[in-house]
Every structure is written in structure tokens, then in C-alpha cells.
Length: 534
Image 1 (spheres, rainbow, N blue to C red):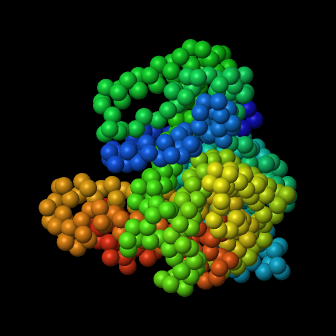
Image 2 (spheres, rainbow, N blue to C red; image 1 turned 30 degrees about the vertical axis):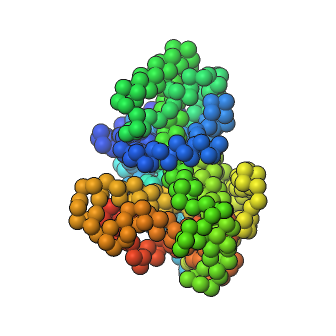
Image 3 (tube, one colour; image 1 turned 30 degrees about the horizontal axis):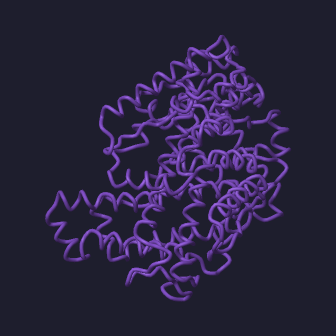
């Protein structure tokens, strides 16, 4: 493996200086386990999930016969040593002001290109030096004098690969420092800086597929036991405890079966388990971020019908009324909302592949970016051919699924709306943050009125009861969150693929003005954006 040379005494010396990782950090950084991804699910949510699986052929996890393709994009969980390196990298990126310095307005003019390149070299060298100094002061001092960065090629490659791998497994983490890292690597991949460093800072992400390919054990991905060995077991009130325990034991037996069958001198037993746990992390991500889409699709089917309109609850919208930019009949709006949710669901379902392609587009030296003011500040505008083609494939599969497509098929990518692939990934990582709080609020309402008579009186007297309140919230969401609003012109919002998500965010921004906002607060709602950490 050319990424990490464990026999290198110099690297061993550097790693020996890294701080230890406490248990809390260890459990957080290994990826998504059951405890970190799930909470006790309500009966109504479980029932909706079952209904969604019956009505949507894509609602279940991908079967084992597609595991080989999935495994190409599933990152390996971090080891204990990896987490020590991650802590060092996170600290270094948090204190770095790279993007503020090199993407400053005063350096964006074409005549300042040379000065901006100089700033890039200074900032990249400063970060690399700082990382080595944090590991070993004497080695860092030597590097500061001789500037032989290629001596630490394996170390830097491993460090940056670990950060990228961790971010893919944990999209909610490193929400500012990850972008900073990718822009730094993007600049480091330029011919001038790569020649200065004398090595390529970017290496492929370590995946389940790459590990099994290297050890000649790809047949493990076709084994029928891999599906059970990698399944995520969620708490479910609709299932008795003994059934959940039986599922856990079946999973453990499947893992041990795979260990006995595929472990070898090249693939130790712990690595077999690592592959199973890594695939489970991917399933956990899908269960967490894809499930809100399934729940909203089930709620749309439960409360509304394209063929029948409940009195006072038509989904029709008219351009110019209440901020809408589209004109749809009730039936057309029902299909428009459903197709948008199905599209988001399929994007999330394929997110790890899209993430891999996005990094390839961002870090490709063959597709340089240009620094432009897009109306959203200074942005790096760059073509994204790989990601764009993948999005076209996903859109085509959803169109085939639904038949008659409603709205535009325009995909914004590499323009002022979605400047580059990093913005694309960030945009669609918001889907679960938008839908999950709504689903959670609707699920928690029933328990809330059972526990508090005062709140029950409030909902009965002020909103006409629980069912009426749920219907009002969903009616407003399926109309106003899919009305083409959210921008100052039709090209930027409207019915295009990205404009649908723009409209949903616009609805989120308007929530505090809604008459039912107080109900969201009573159920524990704190915001759509989640916890924002570096």
C-alpha cells in the first residue's frame, strides 16, 4: 500500500507523538453505529416505513447481488491510529484561515493571479509544516529549513485521505473545515504547486472494495450472509424484544461465518469484521437520511390523493399568489411533490457514489476553476462532468419510475447556482435536515397530547384537534415547499431539479411566521440546520 508505509521509522516516530484518543472520541469517529444514528422510533413512523416499502420498490436496502457495486464507494471505518491522525488534522484545519486568505476579494482579479498563487504556496506550506511540528518539533524544524515535503509524502497522503474518508461517513461533521481541506487540495493539485511539493497529495479513498480486491476476497461481497452481517438493527416498538434479540444474534452469527470462511493471512479476521461494520455504517446512513423521504412519501399518500380533493385542502398553486412561481392544479402539484421526494430519495440512496465522483471532479487537474462572484459571494466555479452524468442517470431512472415527469429537467452544476461539486454535495446533504424535523414533529404530537392535558386543550381549541393540525401542516408543506419560490428569478428557482430544494429551504425560512410554529417548538424543534461544528 503506497498510502501508508508502516515500516517507515520516521513515520512511526511522528505517530508516536500524536495525542491519545479518549473513548468518547473513539466511538464518535468510527462511523455510524446503531446508537449514534437511531433513536427510539414511534409506532406511526414504523408503520409509514412499512407502507413506503410496499408502495415503492426502491424503499428497501439494495439486495446482496448489488453489494459489489456499492462496496466500491463505501469507505472503511477508521482504526484507532486513524482517529489519532484525524484529531490532529481537524485541529490544524480548524485554526487554518486558508480560504479566507487565498479566496479574498482583493486577490480575485486576473492581474493578481501571481500574487494569489504565492499566497496559496505560503498557506499550504504553512499548514503542512504546522502538522509535522505538532507531531515532532525537531522534525518540523528541519522541514521548515529544508522544505523537503516529499520526505513526508506517505504521512500527508494518509492524513488527508483519513479526513476525507471520515467526512463521507459522517456528513454532519466538519461542515466548514472539510470544504477548506478540499479547496486546499484542489490548489495543491495544480501543476505549479505539485511540482514544488514533488508529490501528489491526493490518494484514493480506502473502501471495502479496495481492501477485498487487494486481498483477493471479492467473492465475500457475493456471499448471501453479507446482507445479514451488515444490516442495521434499529429499535422498533412494533417488534417484540425477543425478535430484535434474534435479529442481533443472526447478525453476529453471519459475521462470524464470514470470518471463518474468508479470513486469511492477507485478510485478518478483524479486517473481515471491519468490512461488515463499514457496510453497516452505509446502511445506517441510508436508514437515517433516506427514511425521512420515505416517511414524507407515505404521508403524502395517506393525507392526499391526486384524484380526489378534500374540501379546503386542494394542493393547487397559482404563480404570483403567496410567493409561488408555478401554476399547478391539485393533481399536478401532488405529482410534482411526489416526484421531487422520489428524486431526493434516489440521490441520497446513491450519495456515496456521488460523493466519490464529486471529489474526482473537484480535485481533477484537468478541470481548473475560476473565481467568480455568483451573487452568493466569491465562489470557485468549476465544471463537474462526472457528477453531472451521474445525476442525469438518477433523474432518468426516476423519470422511468414515475412515467410522466412534471416540471423542468434542468440540472444546475458548474454555474452561478451550484458553482462546483462541493456545493452540490452540501446542497443534497440538507434534504434529511429539512424533512426529518417535520416528520419528528408530526410523530411527537400524539405523545405530547397524551402526556399533557394543557397542550391537548391548546391543540383541540386552537387547531381543531390532532388530525386537523397534521393535515394543516402537511397541506402547507406540500403546497408552499414545492411552489418554485426561493429566488428572484425563474431560472434560479422554479421547477428545475435544484430549484425544488431551493423552494423547500424557502419554506423552512418562513416557518417562524406560520400559525403552527409554536407546535413545532413544543415538540422539541430547535432548527433545520442541526449542530454546526468545524
